[in-house]
Image (tube, rainbow, N blue to C red):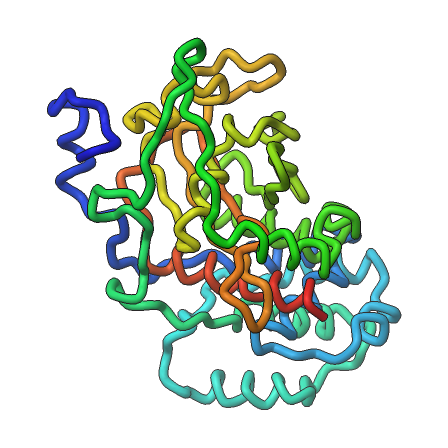
Amino acid sequence: MINKLPEPEVQLPYLAVPYVTPGSCSQLGLHLADALRTQKDLRPAVLQLLNCLGRPLGTNTQILADIREEDWTAANAMVPTNLEPVNRTKSGNHRRREKHRTGDSGAKPGTPEWVQFVVQQCFEVSLAELSIEECVVSESDGTRQYPIFYDEETEVPFAPTCLNEAAREECMTKYNILGRGIGEMKDVQLICHLVAKEFDAITATITALRADRQYPLALVSASSFCVTTERAKSICAHAMVSGKPFLVRNTMLDVRFRNFASVRGDTEGVVNRVLFYFGFPIIAANTDTVVAMLCVMDSRPRKTITTMQYSVMKKLAEILSTLWTN
């Protein structure tokens, strides 16, 4: 493989496993419910995201206005412990929940039962799982589409240039990607939170590139994984080139990234090394232009990701594109 270290005994565990493997398990509904019950500042964002995920409940203000904190606390004790899987047949319970989805909950707004009904909508979220063939990952065949040239002093490669750089800059200006305060948007913060939870990873972030810099637009992390940095020291600079999802299962095995300070672990303020990276392009509406990357990073390498994890990233990246465009 062109861009990997030569030691076969190190590479073998990764060469023997495909980038994406079948897996239907997702905790998206659980993490949505947890955020709704326990994170007051994210509740309006959870309801907005439920609307995008096919569980519309009405306007956030109307739903949340009559719910007191003690109602949320009381509802926490009512969370069912034997939740049914989302791919079940339409039993009586399922039909009743379908009725609930249209707004006929049978519960009085402002009561613990009503809160539980609202929380239950999170567990009812069901994403279509993409097939293996649909889970396309850049460079999964071991090749890349651009040459790499190294800085002889740092042994770090120069950042590649996107072929549609001018179009990308135009879209970033049109939607004011760097100036609209994306990181302060609660729905964006929620999406980063959900991505980190879905992958059981230390951090999830949204990044954008302009000129010779990488900018973190939003970040959920217990450490300082992502700060404004040089484009040449950014994995996202390489991820954006293909316009496809970009997976680095072990950054220490990639000659482009193994000398990054964030990978070696000698960056000041960084508690954890970036040994795993998965970035999904956020594409400007009605174009094929990537304006940012939704990324998840961790200090543990991963041999593979699942089809459902891929599906969750794809859906959330699409939602971000829609939110920014509108």
